[in-house]
Image (cartoon, rainbow, N blue to C red):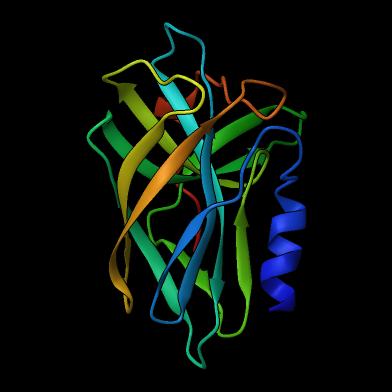
Length: 164
């Protein structure tokens, strides 16, 4: 329970954002959200906390949604010259037993590329998170207000893949 509360605090769920989530077996997804992108944006980033209350690790290995041509797990990396780039995390992300992983700006996040619809504050966007053990977990991303946590990097197509 402490890890879930810590994850909520880390996500900064203040102001108009409302916490929501879903559980599937030992996995709990906490406040899946997308800061509202600009009206003509081709990309958006998704954030959340994923808690594993079980005694064995699990791994997030995929994301599916109808609102984008492609959805991938990405990681922000800061190069030696201080330039941020995005790297596709091909092997997924381990959710340790009894632990919580936070997908947040400046770190791990879900990247939606080739948006097919305009995402507006207050909407709920369906998606499926795919885990090795928990399987397919249906979630809804809340479109949160735009702001500093938005994601506007244009170099996703050229970033090198993350190392496991």
